[in-house]
Length: 421
Image 1 (cartoon, rainbow, N blue to C red):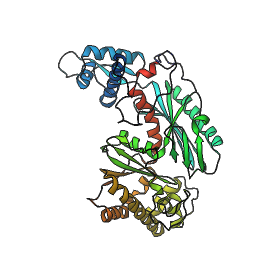
Image 2: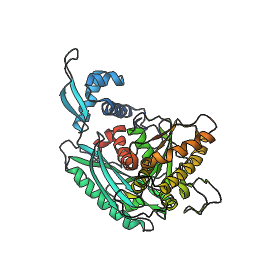
Image 3: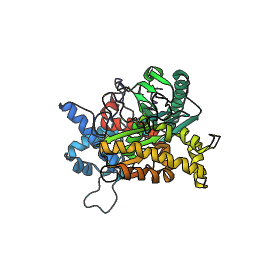
Image 4: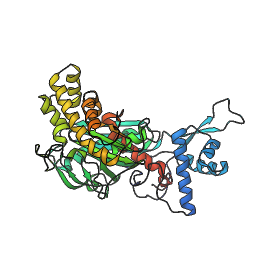
């Protein structure tokens, strides 16, 4: 899975896999580089990339104004970024500006791309995202993964990754890194799945199973969903609680634009917060966990609905039944909203976020979940009721967050691209 030839692809000695930019600092803040001349240069290259990525197309003069460097200094940095294939010139800026128009700069649609992958309980998905944030290739396999050994699942995922990388190569892109979202606890080494109850995986080193030529960064799917919301959502605050769901329920806490990971990296396991301590046994070993009342299987069971073969999946099936006025389904969704509200109340009282964002499968069921959820929050929250919004990314959030984490790593340290063979 080596990078395809490309006329703008830099040459040089191979370097380690790009470190994720989301780990322990605000996204887009750049890698922790030393205050040496070389470190300052690398930070300035990142500042140029982020300015053009966020506000481009921009001229060199406009970039210089935004980041506080001289135009001469910016021009030198821009020339390097163009040579590496990370920026491209589009021609003169739009007419009507005072003075001689400069050449407009934009992030290149060719060159490095982020490869994101998702391991779900009932699907595998992979996509490639270029530096402009556009999805250039995608592949999905539907099928149960619960109870399967990790090796055959990863073999199938690797085949999808290779398919997507090949399709992206046809668009002039090469893989800058791979990030994998999983529904479970991931160690801080960003490769070991410590526990994934809904897959029945324990202490699994995915880094040893995934392609050696594209070392992965592995993280919890809710974390990637929250980062996608932070980076791609409109008007998303920098302090929020992101809740997502598939078979299980996950959450991620974003504080001042960065993930709150906890000591071991396991923060955000909202699905295993007890709602009713004497309730049914959960796969985690506890009783009365939120997943037993608001997880996908729990809602199907409460609604008396079989999973079936609906092309829209279980969530689409529930949404269709609710839209058609099925009172059993609506009652089950109200109960799930109540359970979510009870669990979220503890998190809101403890963390005081600006908002709660419903993502993943929950976004598609929000019309029937929100009333009872909001009622519980209003009744139980110590302070003013916390606003609840619905992610526009829906079930795509985790996959997009994974791919964009690789893209952000390139933006945070574009010089690292030049060090790859």
